[in-house]
Amino acid sequence: MSVSYRQPGVVLTDRHFTVPLDHEDPAGETIELYAREAVAGDKAHREDLPWLVYLQGGPGFGANRFIGRQAWLGRALDDYRVLLLDQRGTGHSTPLTRQTLPLYGGPAEQAERLTHFRADSIVRDCETIRPALTGGAPGPSSARASAASARSTTSPPPPKA
Image 1: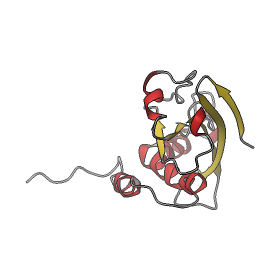
Image 2: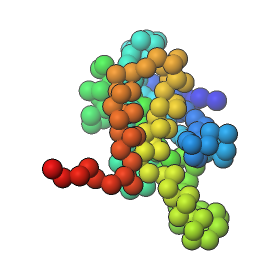
Image 3: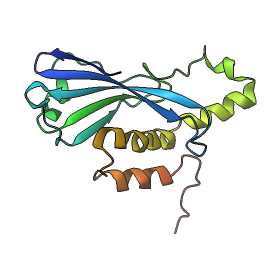
């Protein structure tokens, strides 16, 4: 269930998405992602606004919780619906912390679980939730996102010429 509320000049909607822990095993364990949608108050009725997904960076923090149209968000709301995503393991998404990690077994099991919390999984999360936001329409960043996910953080660097 999504809950919406108003702040000065903006409508905020709390959203929850269920995604696979391991995108290679979509029928396996799932985790929940939390995101806050922000749209200009005078454009809240417009379904044609493109989406801008904001990824906080890291390590381990959820997305900023703006009040009104602060900082860069004010400018972004002129042209976009903004999704402030708490990436997997952070903020209000399913947590992965020093307190929760021991629940998943010993060091080997914990290390394996951590492999599902890298940037390539976050990119795939964005692609997984995109249809819920856009009705399935691809966005201009889809090609860039696919290219980014192909460059896994465990891949060796390209050979030097």
